[in-house]
Length: 441
Image (cartoon, rainbow, N blue to C red):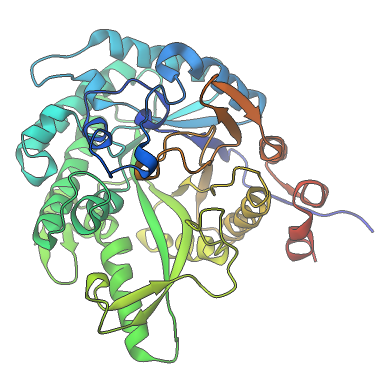
């Protein structure tokens, strides 16, 4: 019987994603470094330290691996605190180093996608009040202008802000991210300022580079009612999704930030996204519960029977990827999957997670959802924020003591996918046999 295959649109971008603080090493001038020095903030007291030593030159061999793996793009971020170490000083050497990295991508035929803010703020920004104050906006705008002027000869794809909903939720509603506050009013204020910051960055980039493509990356959480036939569960799942998933992206379409309990008019934000980046990992069931005040009376839980990652951080809710892209379609712009992956040190779950999620991306592309790229998180194991080094997300493993990279089978699987621009029955049977019947019945 002939083997079958599914293919993605011509010109589809295949890449991996990294972030500056997580891979560079030696970042000591930002809020996350400060957070790491405080007892109890990072699991097991771990520190980012040397990270993956990209600032020491290891980016070269990692990008070689990406190119040899038939990827045609890479998403990375710029560390604001390196480029602007103090309010009145630019570090031209740091900018030149970023130019070298991005030229290295271009030389390897990897189209750069560059993120301008990926969770970290310079310490001097934090000391000024960070995103809680409107003063950050003029500084962020100047930083964006400086970076774009330096890199525009090589970069056309820009991500203004990575996961503003996670930044706000973690820092101002959950406490796991700096500054570790739990204040709904401050959360709203920070979210509004990030919308304004994105809008300013969008216009700054297009003024310097009219042909740029500018978007942001949203962490989409698939929130479904625990009891679909019970209206309070449906209402609560919808409310949480509106606040977490809809608010930021909606503000960039309508100019109104709607956090359900309060609305803020930000007219300058309307129409400021050329594409929408979707970071999708997992989903939850939401159950109405009057005792769950800290979760807005909607208790979240893992779908029963879902396969879990090794530390229980990710539930494999594959169909949530299609729901994420279906939801995003309403914005009427092209879509990118800017992050998707799973923590898995022994590479037992990752091959199945990868092929099954990509099949959902293909479904969306087949429905003409205008999906134009996919970036796997991550190229190599890196420092995972408040979870430190307790999770391993890389196609390539990292020995932190020696900085050696360890090839995982998923690296070869992803290389085959990128080369094919699709999934074949043979590759699924070889690397993810348990998924073969599901994908190719």
